[in-house]
Image 1: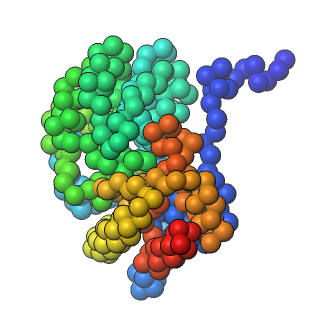
Image 2: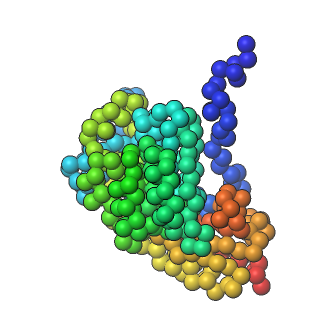
Image 3: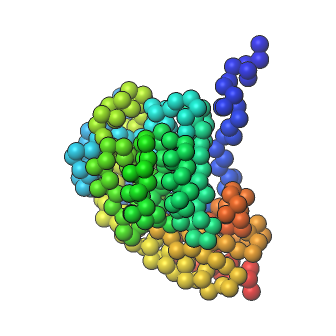
Length: 355
Ligand SMILES: *Cc1c(COP(=O)(O)O)cnc(C)c1O
């Protein structure tokens, strides 16, 4: 017997999620926060950490952490909440719960790669509808046509979108929600950086699920995401959630972080100012095409993405090369906004490259 023959063919056709090797000290490839907490905060956190009962299983419901999230983010009581080991895990639970072999999942593309990956892992067909090449906006006729034709069980809309950085309009999102025959997931991983979006009102629709994470505001290592949605659906999904998915260190640490949330708000403000500065810098090069962003990264096109990517690598700076990911991203790079010093290094290296 060949053990490989026991693995389902749809799993065998997948490629494992690839994280590029990091040898650079300026790591701007994954939308992480460039720094840890200030010393005084770190010390407070460490004191409490010593009292966490690592010999005990975590509380599977994490009641304090949930209450804290509801309070800090003013979440409506009427919505049910589920916690995940990163929003990745929530996406996985959701697809698992709604999976039906041969049915469809739809999203505008390019988008976050896990949507397609998880759909295919559960034998669902992924339908990607290309965004418009010039500004990455939705091709609404194509989206509506594809929804009508494929009747997707799930539609994923990242608001704002990764890796393009833009936010689809509220009117378009409403239209797509109305047209969708199944669940619509509004993935708000980057909403802290978006200027004008409040999706909570969409929760009035039973089919809408809102997904959020703390990864893009500085807590990527802790792995905490949450989703909001209708209680009936969530009590079904709850059956497949592994009971201890949020470990004791994460429960304690996120709660601690939320009690110091003003620190995170200051951090977001700093990144927004740095994003504007970087945008204006990149706009200064006739060779570059840069798109405005509602996230903590900028996506831009250059004459030779591989060459600039490698040049920056040699300058100790790691970006994400999107050039070979999708045709409309040809020659595009994605740059996470780092600390002011890191961004200054990037500007110097880009300047040097095009001098
Ligand atoms: C980063 C990202 C996620 C995953 O976040 P985690 O909570 O770290 O798993 C989800 N959706 C989008 C669009 C992202 O960019």
